[in-house]
Image 1 (cartoon, rainbow, N blue to C red):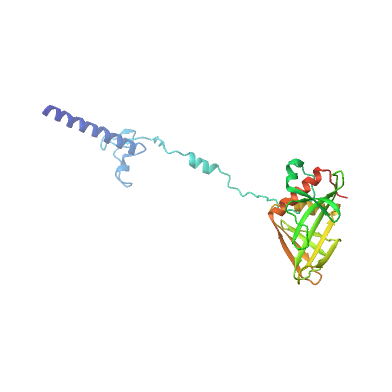
Image 2 (tube, one colour):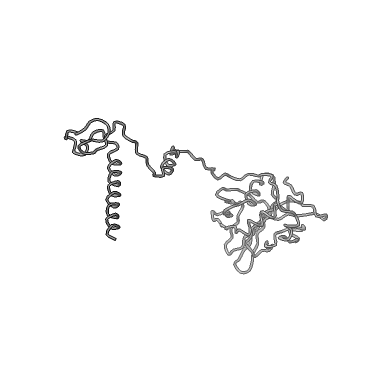
Length: 262
């Protein structure tokens, strides 16, 4: 047992000695003079190459380059990034103009959203949500058809019902931030119950109105209608998402049936 302990102690001393030598070598492998251990002003014991016989410093004239094991890929990635200032161009919103778009839907897919009704003596195709009377505020597109089902004119109908006469003669649609003017020519006015009055316009849309039609049927964000009264009073009506969808379906069905602008 005693021999084992002595052997263990001797091995421990040997291991510690090897570790000390390794540490010393690692620390001093770059030393060009043993004076490095003694301060900058000390005279070296040994200025050659090899091991100093006095202090044991390992002296070399060619320091060993240190090898780093740190992953430098992240630093390399940062250095290789392009930090130059780039100029980005964003498409500004533009006023919509008529485009001959491809229509994805078929007549059979669209027809379920419409109804047939006589309006002003003409058989007409209207959105199911549209109301034709003198007591409802509304705005919608519809089109007439002949006895064989051929489309006639695409029309814009506006209905105003309130207790204040407006006597509007022109209107402006604001669609996605742009104005589209329209001047109706077929306007009717009358008295409702009590103090109520009604005004409505029902006009054929011409070639000059194609941009308005396109904007109404392709509105992406919001739209409103402003009716201009003859005494400076205006009536503003926000157009709902459902009405915009009706505009789009009406124009598509009209074109699919062979409708066109004159």
